[in-house]
Image (tube, rainbow, N blue to C red; front, side):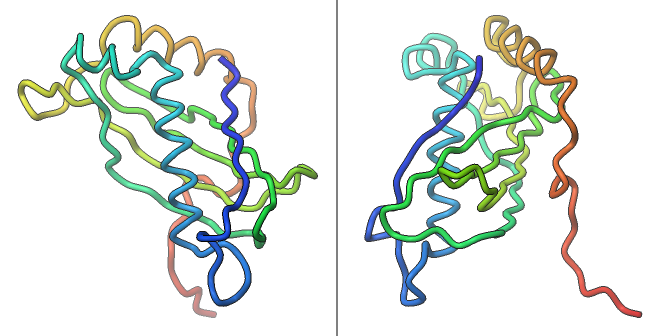
Length: 154
């Protein structure tokens, strides 16, 4: 699976500074995450069949370049790591010219909806995650991955 989520910045996402509002970057990343989840086999029908879903546990967003109204962008996904019930996912938002506009690093957890708690991915989903991870194994770790927030003191 080569994941790509394409979108154009709608006018309602633009703030008083004339560019995409910070919350809307996260809206775009959230929509891309939902598309990624469907892409690994957890569409609406599978969620109902397995009584299983995925929750977001943590995110970290880096805003690197402005996005203006009407600009098209593409979000790609890289699985940095995974285990039986979690995915460490990294999303990159690119302008049409390929320049990196923003990134979102997130930890996702699979949830058994009957129990309301973390549980291993259903076998077909686990297989898809593993295959994607192996396919991306030769990719470099993104520069923004694993960052922390803080003021550096000299």
